[in-house]
Image 1 (cartoon, rainbow, N blue to C red):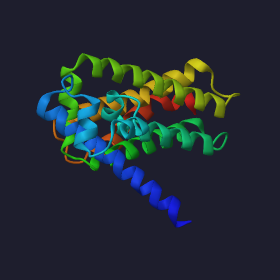
Image 2: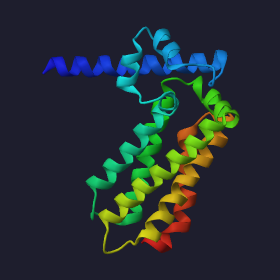
Image 3: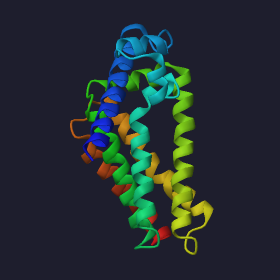
Image 4: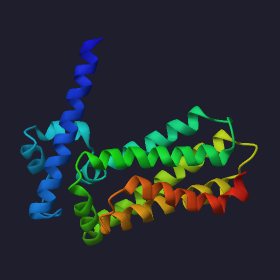
Length: 202
């Protein structure tokens, strides 16, 4: 029983080492000039090990985002048909925000760097939009599957878009302004969005 835990911890350490190395190199020499081989070498692992953890250089940059959407989908799946759709969606997005904030907190210095790179690297901005669209579709599909008799495709997509839009916009502005309590700001943003959705989903 101990061995799987040790393996998982080693996997997490290696993954975090790759993220740390990548962000340092992106800061020092630029995103476009940094190669996968350089990231692997800086983390003291092989290039093959890099690809065991991340499909591409882009995925290292967006590593914290994956944890958020996975957490949200777990919430919706666990509460399918249980309670009001809006309550479940809010809980899912809050869980996403907490998971994402926790991942960012592991490397607090990276927030401003991520924002700067997103604003200056076209490839990252395009990938961010693509990933956002994918995340919204996954969550909207999960919500509709959880409440097939109460929510149609358009309502699910619009509701998810409203909440995630509030969270993402607040995150970006919070990082730019060095918001001291980003989780509290995100909670407030969710509440503002919920006021507009209450009449539709409840």
